[in-house]
Length: 400
Image (cartoon, rainbow, N blue to C red; front, side, top):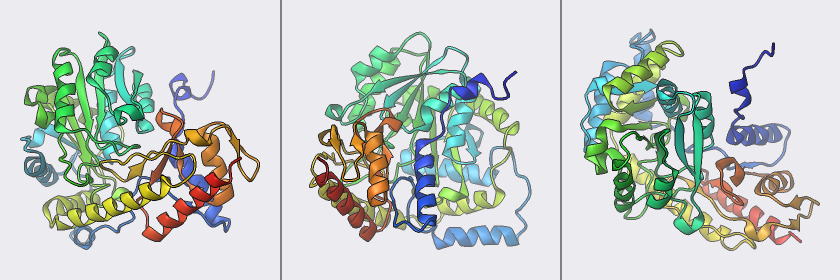
């Protein structure tokens, strides 16, 4: 009898984590490495949030809490949805967990039966398909090419829906492309879903506060109130509030679904960290002015990175509307050989050779379901980004 389950054999480790770990190992060996593979803001957590965590420790808030979140944190989340999205939720419609990833996982575990299908637009966050597989479902990936702005069209959504479809995974702004859906584009997708009442919407809004220019963020439950009762909206404090390590995510949706997610959490992790919960209360209820300041900084970085990458031979980099990623095509580099002798026949080969020969760590597009591309996180200091882009350009210029 094998030790590991057949379900586990269907799942692969996260390529983004693997690339970040490899970059860290090379740096520990003394290599000059520029890590642009992790989706993590380089800002420190705001001081008021850190102070709230220290105060929570001093006040003795170090015990178990309610399984899926403190009542006062749930109230703060309800206020956040009302303030930012015009959505009204009751505390009983809120679940808090150890990061947005756990919220997604709990929802899929609570709802999927063998054979249930989950539509996942590609490029996608690397964890979506594997979480569906762990939940016993079948991921149905729908390629969304650069010609469509890396976004799902209503026609493609309609074609992907079957009687076994349980969820549409929706992520805007997107990891890995930074593509964001306009209100009209969200409305068009919701119009398709109205014709298929058995399909639920799982909206991952974690990059909500990172949209640029005059782009207006909207979420499906906000745009289509008639679909409110079959939408789960997931968010958290990791990206906007630079709290990735604090591990607090939350979800809002129908009470029956939230109850199922609570049951999963009660038999897995129980409550998220009590101290982090108090820090998240301060993050959501405290000053919000720094969000606009950080957004302006990210937009400037985006413009710099896109401009530099589009000067590199063989690369073509679209301008994203949000998040802190770019997803350039490397089609013009395929079929060539690097100065170090590596054959560049895939985007994975490109990323591997780039790391080995220049010290720039990024993630290859095949990990996200659409090739030949690379994902670069520009959540790094300006000097590091400029240096990395120059190294990438030099690498591309050296291909023969």
